[in-house]
Structures are given as structure tokens and as C-alpha cells.
Length: 309
Length: 172
Image 1 (cartoon, chains in turn orange, brown):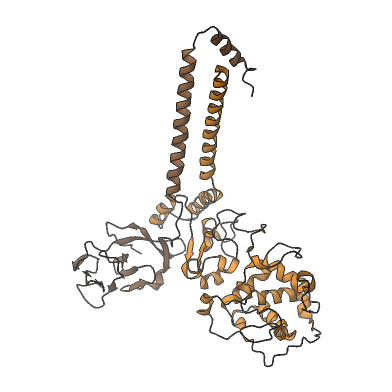
Image 2 (cartoon, rainbow over the protein chains, first blue to last red; image 1 turned 90 degrees about the vertical axis):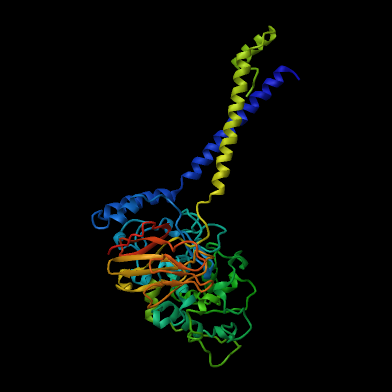
């Protein structure tokens, strides 16, 4: 082989080798630099300012020695692993009331008292991707192709309803209203819930458990999530599911929200049973009417007020 | 990048045409190649090592809250379900003791109203004193005490990743 060619090859090898080293170095740096590490360092700094060494030296020293680590809540019975607390470290700590995100305390500490993070985790109520350790990855905002986004504030009650079927007891006004609308519109004429109702449309008993990946999002304008699908479906069933015989009178936004909350709370997952005495759903239709009646939905002043909120 | 056009290449080309072999240059290239290889392999080995030590495992945290202090009155012995730990509060302080038998890992049972025996293993009958010392049976070691502290919210926290070798009680 010619010397010139050999030299070229030598140089090429060297350049590739050096480039490889630089890339490896970059990977190491990138691997070590995570946003949650910065948050934990900031949390530590803030917490040390808030507690007194003299009052609880053991705690102070422990926090001072705290090393960045991924924190997680493993809920074996539900098969969830929530790492939200890696960043939301002050979520149960009254000292962080009013602090900025992600350190701030839960806005409803009373509710959290009954649902300790250590026992229930976060995603059981809030949705999102519990395993993620980045803001984007946790699905705080809609991300394309991630079908289980965090639950919107207006739909929070749908998650309460997964376990709690006594809506009055927990004061879930939207669920109560949603169930009322479901009954008023005779939805049970076509849809079954817990083996009660007609069999024209799909069974809704486990609607909350359905895989969002199996929905057709072709005609959905919002994000490709089950929440958007349901909302838009209630606005215009024929548009979202072409060919569907489903008829719905025009509902206002608040009514759609309530109905969405209700259907998204219908779950049959085994773990919910231990929190729910079998039928407290209150939904026991007296008579099954398979003909869809023309319903004039009563819109009260209260509904309109709710819709404007 | 064109080799012939670079100034360095031109100089080297001249020298080689004279039939003189530049040993310094050859040595330098050799050293550089070996160093690159060594660095690359080293970095790859480090990253592989990192891979073998995951940041986190799919298991419940070893540091867990067991409740407010008020839940544990003086003289109480409360077993924390699912954690294999008992919280004992006495007049002079409190401690968290492991309820996992040091023999084969069975969950041992606290023995009530016995001045000598505090715990007994239902599997092979090992017995332990109130402070966890082995009294009898096949258990080879005493029951460990875990670190425990009160956090800023007033909740009692057990750190089962750290054994309290000195067996110091938490004074509250």
C-alpha cells in the first residue's frame, strides 16, 4: 500500500478515536447532569434554611448529608412506581406551603392526609408517567403519542370516582352531575354499566380501564388522549366516531365535563374493589329502554354558572 | 479534510521522499494511538460499570414514614405491617427493630407479657430478648435496630438502609 494512503488511514483512525472519546465524555457529563439533581440541591438548601439545628440536630445533619438520589413510591398492589417525589420533595411538608414548583406543598393538605403519598403515590389520582424523572417525560403537558397525560383539573374527580363510588360522601359534584346526566339522557338504553343497560353500544363498565391506544383519533382535534376523545365525542359523536348511531342533545361545556368525569371513573380494576363496597354507585336503572328517546335536557341556571367557570 | 493540502502533510511528504524516516513522528503517532485506545476502553469500562449500578431499583424505599409520634404511646410495641419492623417506645426513648429472622428470613412474632423473651420465630423457634439478642434456636445473629428520626413535619421515619449498631434509642 502506498505510504500516502497509509498516512491517510492513520489520521482517519486517530480522528475517529478522538471523536469517540469526546462523545463518551459528553455522554458521561449528560448522564450525570439531570434536572432532578438541581431541584434536590435547591430543596436541600431551602430546607436547611427552614429548620433549626439546635432543635433537631439528627435531622439537620441527615439533610446536610443528603446526596442526590431518585426517590420513588412503589405501590405493588397497583403495579405503579411513582418517581414524582424525586422533584416534588416538599409535597407533604407544611414548611413549603406557598413555595415555588416543584417544591410547593399539595394544594389540598387535608385530602393528602387521607391519601398519604407513601401509600397511594401520585399517578393514581393525577395520571401522567410516574416512572419519568423529567418535566417533559412525566407528561405534565401533552406529549404526542403518550396516551395517558396528566389529568386536567376539570377532570380530577374522574379519578376520585375510580375508587369512591359514594359520590355524595366525598362531595364530588361533577360526578353526581355526570351520573345525573347519564340517567336523564337514558344512556343506559344502549350502554351497559355493571351488567345493567342495553347492549346496542359498547359496555361502559370498565371504560376507564380501556387502553387509550385502541381509540381512533383520526377526527379528534385536541391531543391524542382518551380525555380529549371523550370530550369531543360528547360534543359531536358522529364526527369523532363516524357511522355511530349515538345521538346526543347539545350539551354545554360544564355538562360535557361532568359526563366525561363520570364515564372516565368507570373502572373494574381489582384493586378498586377493596375501597368500594360493591354497589354504591347509585346507578340502578329500574327499566331498560333500548329505544333511544328524544330528550330535551333541562339546563338549569346553576349549570350555566358552572359552565362559565 | 484533504491530507495533501495541509501544511503538515506537505512537510512530511518532503521528508519521506528524501528516504529519511521521521522516528519522532512515528513514535508520537504510536503513543497517541495507544493513549486514544486506552482512554476509549477506560471510558467504555466506566460506563459499563455505571450500567451495572442502577440509579434506582424497583423496590419500596428503605426510608419510610411510620406515622406521627402520638401514634406510639410510651410502653407500646407497634408492628409496621408490610415493612417487617416493630417500633418500641419506652420511657427512655424509642427504637425500630427488624422483625426478619436472621436465620432464614421468616417474619418473627413479638411475644407479649414475657420478661425474658421478646420475639419468637414461628419457623424454627429462634427466640430473641427484648433488645433483639439471640436467646436460643438456630438464629446466628441478633436482630438489628434501624436508624430512626423525627422529620420536620413531626413524622417518625425509619431508615432501614442504616443499621443502628450502637443501639442508641431515639429520645423524644
